[in-house]
Image (cartoon, rainbow, N blue to C red; front, side, top):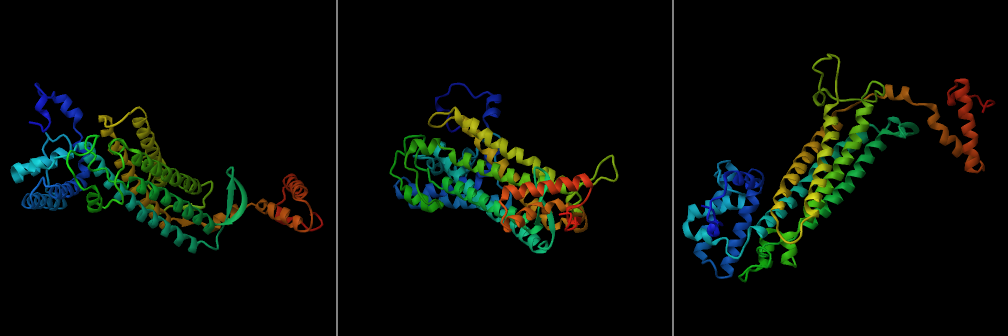
Length: 408
């Protein structure tokens, strides 16, 4: 028997049950769902729907569920179609008829979005500490590589000399912007929709400000239709994950190229490399290649969510059941990628001698042009003069730094 089958004359087809079941995905929301239920029980007590004794029994049951979950002993039935029905079924089985009153004035529509907002807020907060772990690794590298000069590139051509520490810190500051994107996404998620019902609000006078405070939200939703239908907070979070993935992929690409024999600037630690099943000599930068590859998942999950939302009106549609899997995937992979990248940065070996041999004296061409500008020559003229000197060096097979003063 289902909790909603009163108006149905025929049982749900078994294939439809499997198709409709979301518990394998949304069971990740179990802690949030129990927390929302506990807060709702107190709100129902304040509204006079539950007695103090009934509320205490219900909340004690939920507390025991949380303990079982922490111990890994909380189990669900195959017939539970989602985490909300599973938790409510367990409550009713354990405390009896009073458990069936927990859903008074509430819908799964406002329940699920409240659960999900709580989960997203915590997940985005967790990302900050992981990003900062990578930033600490970058700072340590910058301190250690502050004397190392490398060629800076534009168009994958040597352009101007830079410090390797300057390169590491470019990564650090780019990550600062990613943290701000995640912070803004968390602020978007920080809105309490509980009490919005299926779409038109609760049928009982529940204290929504109390609920927001109890659950840790900074504000309540202003409109019940918007509260139930909105998934912009998921889209923004996925956008932030996609942006982070793209950034990490770009720096992974640099290090992949730098670790090749043709460049030889860096060598990955054995612990963060893999070998070939056929070629015994190979040492592959698979950690970085997977970082680069997993960015496609983050981009794809954002596109998936945008495609999901674009055709939906208001308020709730079952399509929205698909919103959680995309977020869980991006969140899980972002956490792994950040942790791996931090360890790669900490352990990578910089091959300073190979870098020094690769430095092309033409890297100093802009400095020579600037020198002429300092002596009063217009920059465009200085640019042309140094360009002719470079052409002469190429023609004569001479390094720029080996020209005599008379030749210059």
